[in-house]
Amino acid sequence: MNEMRQKISRIVDELMIFQFNNGAEDIQINLRRQKDGIEILFGSVCPGHGHGDMEKQVERLNRYLKVERNEAMEAYFWGLAGEDEGCDNAELQLIGQMVDQAEARLEGDKLSIRLFRRFGR
Image (cartoon, rainbow, N blue to C red):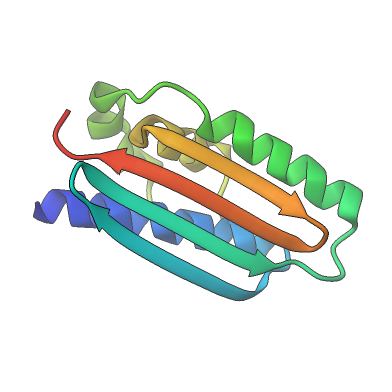
């Protein structure tokens, strides 16, 4: 379970960086332990960021997050992704391979991200 906590923490870190890089303010995070996994919910406000630009960022985020979970890739590449200051495509793609469900939505200047990771597949 300690490894699961570390992975959830890294997922949260990378998505926080994504939001900060896109001008997010008032970021809220909810982690919900459910009987079959962990649900991660983000809500933030992204004011002053060109709406068209933010829409493109959310589309890009959804493309990277909505891939099939791949535990072999997850174990191998997490260490290679490293811990840099910026969240780039490699980290976002890796997060997509670490979760079972993901969705990001932008409504006005409000960004919401929902992820779900099942326990022991």
